[in-house]
Figure 1 (tube, rainbow, N blue to C red):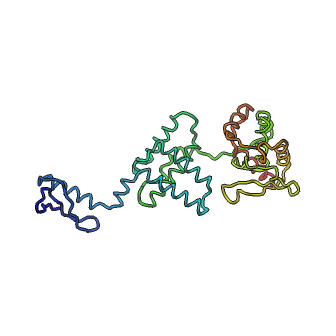
Figure 2: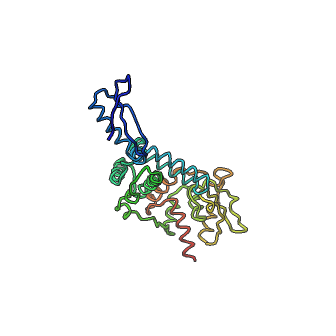
Figure 3: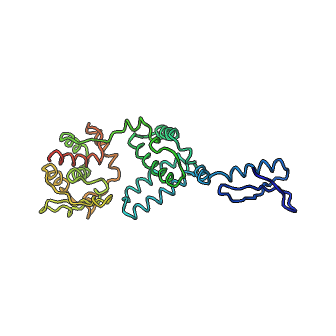
Length: 304
């Protein structure tokens, strides 16, 4: 138990005890009455006897986890373990999470119940908030907390943060476009937008590469198309044109002037929204740019 004493010529009492590491401590209680000084000395002793790791974990905030996440993303990109696009994805999701889990929020308070409250607030915020979007945000949240846990700043269960019913409801998309749907989509899109869709279906190119496509990327003699992907090393690739539907669609994409010389198609900033609207207009199920890539892959898989 802590002792108290007065230094010569001082009105305040001082405490005398040993801390967690066994070191002798003699802090001032800033109390002049013996009873109050003894109570303060006991409080100081209890605090000093606590494991510093426990104290750090209790005081850690979401802002600390954000700093760890930012450092991790930067190091991963520099080391080639993560693409710049993936790092931007996590940074964007972290920004969204921070709008509700403020920087000063204690990490210890981020529990499964807190995540449920977060998801409920996101759904009540208006707009379209799908399970797919929720899962993406939880991926970033769990990554940040995993980094904090590795440093002893959070001790929760990562798996428990994602609600069971959300895991059960979430199913990866398997949308593949049929021939009839293609014709309907072609009629529902302006010609310049259809050319971009045709390019994606013919080459399997991801959305971010559409605006980088050039007419010279197609080597007609070799029947190869260069796709300028950047997410991973393998995304910058040569795609063989081996199926008739792909050859037909590629010709359609190339049929017309360069829309943003020297680029073939130009930018399409609202492709996700425009494809959704076009699908509604065409009377076909919702589709996304990734569905075009999936359709390309399915055609080739089915062709052996």
